Image (cartoon, rainbow, N blue to C red):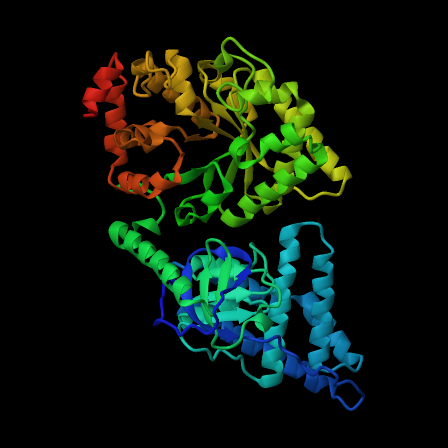
Length: 586
């Protein structure tokens, strides 16, 4: 991550110019703009005076020169950057594509110059890709456009331009993957483009090289001038052009905070989450509100393990303002899609609305003697299928990024799982009929929050892709103790042997069926619980944003074999007090 700050700039304008785009590689950067304008090639050479053999030879020689340039980049990349090597190989394959070569040669034989033949051929391939429904394939068109431009530059100018001052912030219409590698050699501070995609090779490489990158800023090369001072917040996707002195110093504080965290935790924050002996564990974040997506810690995680959609979505607007199902679906889709794009390519698990009980009781216009054992979670959703389907449709529409997963709350019976799956299939069919894009293979999971679900986990695991254990409710329902009731709060203990055994039973069942298991309750953030969680062999741990880096540090300090031994000892105790004493919890 390039957290570079240049010298305090002179304030050029009294008011900040702020541009907004899509962040694809997180980080902060400050520096001078280096503008790359769109290449305008003279392709009008067309006539009988051209020698086809010479034009074909020029075309083939340019392929050789471009491949040599790719080889030079490949040799400059450290061995561990296999992603970059694979991407360079994919460009090489495109250059060697027999269909492209055949088309270019046919155009040349028809009287076209090599330049025009290349332009017409690549235009045809771009058009074919852009006509495909699949978003990922359409984004390949951006790459073909850039590879074509690089090829033409080499064909016409006999060289590729890579001259750029170090620590510059590149502003371009779009970038090819090999340009990103070239810019890495120049230690660029950040990348900004007018168009692009979250899944393009240039975006993937920017993330791999930790170069802050923002795409999708229309007319950026016109709105920004060479040597403008830029501040790049690639967490929020914000570019500030020629900032005021006040804005500059506020930004500088953010960078200093980031550098402090890096200094305190060391390189661990950028390394994969793993135990002391190298056992990998996915460490994810829980979020409630859209504003939490601005927290940089989220982008140092392995994704989002729990989005509490009942907090993210303005549910009261639906009930209080009678806004209608279609509009409510669109509001949800925009929120979910925004989350999915921002955390891409990492996964995001959206939990369906967990309403009822202690959540939004005033919305239902009904009074229950015991709401925590009443009409809540998946029970409410299945009893209101049209309402539920607006959310499922929004989830599916947002899944076009292929990193969205769907999870349902408060499961107690197999029927609830099967009915939810049936509604998801109904929504898929509806979206197909409407020609709406979605991921047909979107993953589906359930929350294990009740003893009933835990004890049936061997059966439930057959119908889901993953399981997440919510320790707060599982503890509450297992021990029949409301943690918010001072009279019984002493009974509430996730360290109780019965809770630990239910978790172990669930995890064993899931593992036997080859299903991933995560944990997303408060227990995951308890310093004394890290060893037990590792010993239980959870695949993923999801915690609040503020605890994320600390939990990562705890995980790195524990040996997995020690954790397993610790768990076995804890499971032999009879009371929560004994477990707490064993773990030295005050």
